[in-house]
Amino acid sequence: MRKFKWGYIFLVATVLVLGACGNSGDAGGTASSGNEQDSEEGGEVTIDLYQFKVEFKEQFEEMVAQYVEENPNVKINVETVGGGNDYGATLKSKIASGNEPDIFNIGGPQDYEDHKDRIAPIEDSKAADTALEGTLDAVTVDDQVYGLPYNLEGYGLIYNKAILEEAGINPDELKTMEDLQGAVEELDGMKEELGLEAVFAFPGKERWVYGNHSSSSFLAPEFNDSVTEAFEADTVEFELSEELKNYIDMQVNYSEQPVLSLDYSQQVEALYSMEKVAMIQQGNWAYPSIEQIAPEVAENSGIIPIPVDGESKMPVGVPQYWVVNSGAEDEVQKAAVEFLDWMYTSEAGMDIVLNEFNFIPAYEGYDTSQISDPLSEEIYRYSEEGNTSGWVFLGYPTGFSEDVYGNNVQQYISDEITWEEAMENSQKYWEENR
Image (cartoon, rainbow, N blue to C red; front, side, top):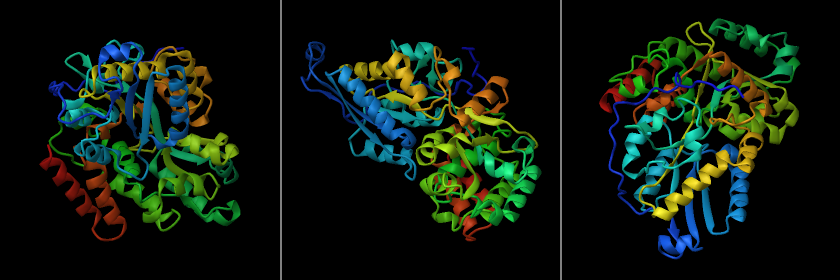
């Protein structure tokens, strides 16, 4: 396998300072014997795991069951919250209730800053040693690693190859927003002939789709593709505000209606997978859901970058990191790292990560020729070529992407405020929370 350099995606967040490793609440995990010595002698260790990726919930739970079967002294309770729910907000509520998970997820520097008092350093980890260069930078503070990357992901416009081919549209030629607008209008004019209900399915209910991903694509040039620059920025100018507005308007106007009631499941499964729309904005994480509903549609799907400022770069990054609660008992922390290492470095775990989760691995040692789904293959190709942009949304102020920007876009879509007001409100929040 060719070794890739991912340093350009994440720069080291040098402004972060190492917080105390003590925990302000009680973590959930316990050893049934009550002490480390008994655990080593065969006592059961219980790990409470709280994760965000709903797309592979079933496959992940099956993998956990396999691990527990091979390690009968370990019990892992899995809770998955994501999709239509704000994982970050629910995590904070869970922590505030005193029911803290032993393993949970964070994004970039801002999430680390929010939770640093309860994040343990990842020590003696095989997975950390094999992580691709640059993928640990966002969770490295003072040369100490505090998290393990989920995987590498990319997002853009997923399209049905057969539909675009029937319409005479070459997706490789959609390099600018003008190109995309022209293709969308052409598809709209052929809806009846193509059997479409709409060109897009814009999931207005899912603020993370446009609050994280759409905004990040249009803000990445402003922050030089750097999550660290976004994290350090005192303000956001929305330099490409008009282009971002046009992109949102285009999706809303040519979408299945009403957009504000459309959720992820309707977008991906009910509309795209059933060939009722030609394209959707999503990432390679959507492939398992599409494949489960309509295998032929999944295999006949492609993905192109969102055209931004005259360029066509695929946004690629680490979506989240696994972290271990520093308030958990020592044997629980140790068992947590051993589980994560098994998932990413054991022969059985690597096979599941590659072929069941359909992940693009963020670690060395994988046979990437086995990447089988067409969305991941295309994203991987862009990565090989270095034709990517960074995920700057991981450096946004806490609550900005969904609660503020996303909420303001929803109000704009429903004609409650103007686009200018949406941008002004978002900018004000950014400045007040920096």
